[in-house]
Length: 68
Figure 1 (tube, helix red, strand yellow):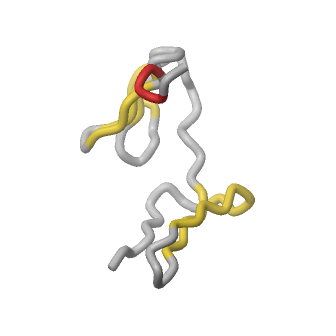
Figure 2 (figure 1 turned 60 degrees about the horizontal axis):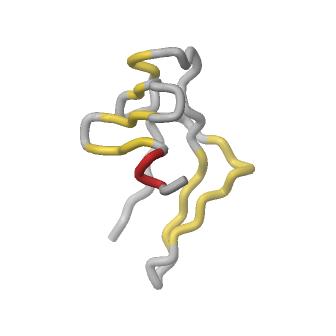
C-alpha cells in the first residue's frame, strides 16, 4: 500500500483513509469511528537536523518541539 492511500495531514488536521476517522491538529477525534485521541511522543531535533521520535516517551498533546 502506498503511503498516500493511508491518509493525509494538512494544516487543518489528519484523516485516516483506512477507517475514515479524522483528527484536529492536536490529534483529538473530530470524526469516528475512532473514539480516542492520537498519542503524542517526544520529538528531538539534533544540531545536524536529524529528527528522532521516542516511541517510549509519551508527551502532552500541547507539547511542541522548537525547530531552528
